[in-house]
Image 1 (cartoon, rainbow, N blue to C red):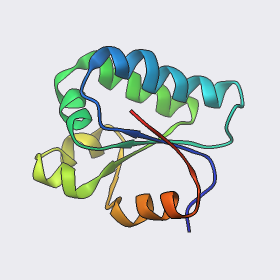
Image 2 (spheres, helix red, strand yellow):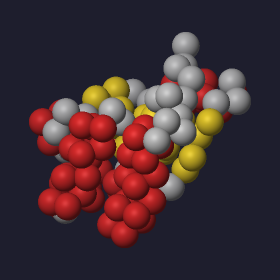
Image 3 (cartoon, rainbow, N blue to C red):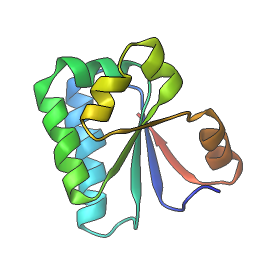
Image 4 (cartoon, rainbow, N blue to C red):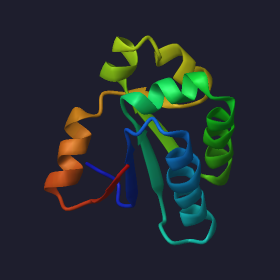
Length: 113
């Protein structure tokens, strides 16, 4: 069962998009009560950006501190050698194929970046 709320599927490896869209919107959504629950799903290129960019790591931590749930695709994380790095940041690492499909099929709110 998929929890209601906003899911942000973050696949983009661009730092500006990450800072000025993904985490700005996710954090403000929680702080201002726009959504009861916000989950950022880290997938693909965004994982490498986390590993390579200290500002992005800080943004992940700040978002988590504000109540944003951050989760990553385990298949991608394992393939890219990123699982341990992500888990060390407090990012949940799990298989996202079925949950993503359920979000889409159930009409959940999904923002892709």
